Length: 232
Image 1 (cartoon, rainbow, N blue to C red):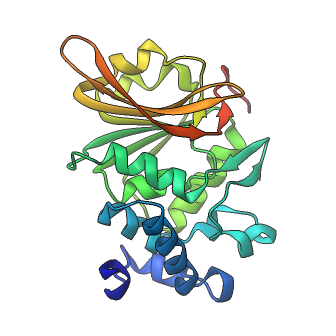
Image 2 (image 1 turned 90 degrees about the vertical axis):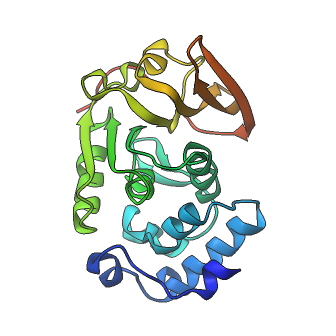
């Protein structure tokens, strides 16, 4: 595939300095991208973001050797870093119209999803309800010198109204139904992608219209539930 034949252009020197060796090397990331292409991911900007982003930095050192497996992995506090294919699928759907300006990322977790979005959008606002996770994610993104991400300790059900409207909203936690507050925080034609359900979950993409919204089912997934409140 052409994206793997092209030289790697890192977003800044911090990315090149943290590309890793062995099981965390660029070669291993390239194999992950090959798998994503095989699974139907075609957005070159998303594939490139996955190709250059050092996922191993978002995991504990003991888990680093598994960073480029296409699977969700634990990050503590009963949370996970999302499966790369799911990250790529959600991001591709959000980026389908291109020209993302302001994006809201619900459920910062490890910070990996926010880092991928930061390479595609002008500004990313990411919110997390578990303060230690938020602090750790902020440290990793600072290490990568990503300056277009703003972190907030907040309840995902309410979004981030003080910074709305957003071109896109992505949630890495699953409610029983979409909080109306999130639709209110989208621009017209803005996109929202999130899992819905508890034990059985489906990933949905929504587009806000002048009279409501359209929805598209993107397949079966499994995310942590969306919970209310803040944990410090």
